[in-house]
Length: 330
Image (tube, rainbow, N blue to C red):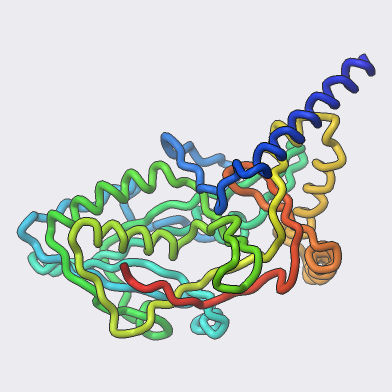
């Protein structure tokens, strides 16, 4: 039995080495493409939201049909994250949430469309370490939310509410069909963008997949459909960057947490994420902050979960940075 386990372990390590070499020898594409799915999976009941997702939107994500002859105004919407709870506080650090607004000329009805986490940002950024599971458990789905109304005060008081274009009802309906497909196939939220350094010519290892990325995709789709979009102000968006050398591919849950030969790697990943576990006391959170500093800055190590696979990032200065950078309208 021992001999068999040794042989299997050796074969697994050899396989991972071959995979890593395959990616290193010019085959790995950077940034790593975001994985699309055939359909959105059901939500695990273990995942619980502090605030319900899309409480006033259609439960099935349907978007109202507009008459082809209608004229629809398009609005750029931006406000500090959790503005409803903390006001302008996070806006002072340029931590912003983005959405798109629409207004029908024929009916006078306004609509808001946004894409965000089903179970809040923390759950999408770090996993749960469950007693009944060896592998970290992720509640990282994100989805589009379309609902009637635009809360003018919410968007304009500490952020942006600006008309940027006009489209026809037919263009709106075409966009709505695209949103349904995009929402069904792009199912998980990714907080981090990872690049080699802060310079303009840096290599991008991974792109984020968040509210602002959805807004950018929507603007591009509207432009493809013939819309003309313009803004009187600079269009800036929040990005949270990690900085690292070339990432190393490690494998998925079954490859890492289902193989005795990779027990040390599995334990190291669990130890890393234990630092970022939810529901900590203030004292535990202070200790975890020091542990995170030691791991990320002193040891220069970070484990990234992307496309349901793990990667190791050899971190380097400035390690982590929140930016508020311009992304022009298409």
